[in-house]
Length: 258
Image (spheres, rainbow, N blue to C red):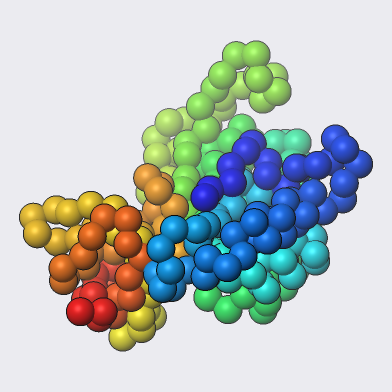
């Protein structure tokens, strides 16, 4: 199951709930009780719960506790941050306390070893200076996100950014985009290499030239990487895979349950 919304952490706020997402997750886990976590040992049941699009300002201590103490909830969080420089974030009309983001991510990683964090950033937002962009690069280098998507700012009439125009040349946007993605590709490869020799549960989703193709807890459908698996498997199974190889975005391994 994938929980997805424009902001999943806003769930229940209209009902006066401070920790609505945490309450919802606890209820989902309770409904799935008795079906096992995500080891593939039991057929049927709700084995994987993935949370997407969490707003940094609403990741509470209770949410972290619920995610870290229930195995059905994958240690994965998609948290779009958009930028890392306070001035850029201010122009985006987003919270600009990046130190708070550091603190929150640190608490989450301490509570959930192996936590996979996906984020997205925008480069070339109106007014972004080279200094501001360098702050973003430094932030990405320090935080070492598992997954990262990037977009070049695109002017859209009628949006809140319309008064700012589109002053940054397209070639500058492209150059910054390439620098950011080159940095992230290096980080992704290093993070993936750290899984070589380890065993991950993989959900098999199909086959390609005799190789099973699936996803681990670190991989959301369509936007993240894949795990390529040697061995006889069935679609829909969650199987143990020993990782034998790493690429910048994908992993390779062998099914060890045969």
